[in-house]
Amino acid sequence: MIDSNAQTFVYTISTLSDNANLTGILASTDSSFSNLFAVTPEGSAGTTIYAATVSKVVNAVYVNALTEHVGAMVSMFKDGLPVTVSNAVYLNVGVNPVHIIVIAENGNRQAFTLNINKLGSGNADISGIRYGNEPLLQSGNTFMLNVGWDMATVNVLVDLSDPTAQMTVTGATYDMTVIHIKDLSFDASQNIPDYRYGARRNG
Image (cartoon, rainbow, N blue to C red; front, top):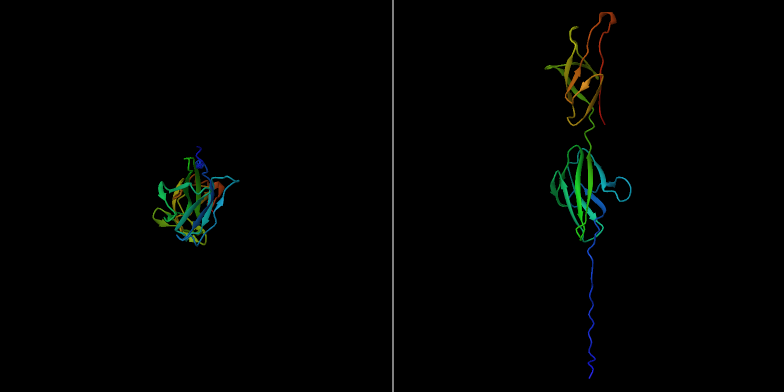
């Protein structure tokens, strides 16, 4: 006698995905991601570097990295500390890197970086220049200092209106706080009435 009953079994074998790619990065000034700002990839397709710029008034942002594969996991860090989608990323003036690690189902990893550039105030003023504890005389954008004929070197302190600004100096050396003016040798035959040095804010 032949048993006509038969059962069919179906086995589904799935492999773990190695996809650790991103489709993009969302960045917003609020946790609900309703105030998005532009995030652009740097370079050609497949780049791992993204960039964004925010104004001086933005103190914190929220970041969400979007994976190509739904099973991939994302870890984010700023200054070595973990960041989640609901965590505010606090910004300093200048470039703030957010490091993103995407882990595929099979453990494959890929690293990405989002560089968020927070702009400075744009204030290019020098609030004062001091020689010792005395402020230099100022007329418009010109500061004046009178020294004795036998002075060969002068150091003056610079106070910028915006402490995050940077400045370059021509004709003298500058270490971000003090302008070092040297070689002020005086020769009466040259009849040099004064020395002039230029300073300007970078950016």
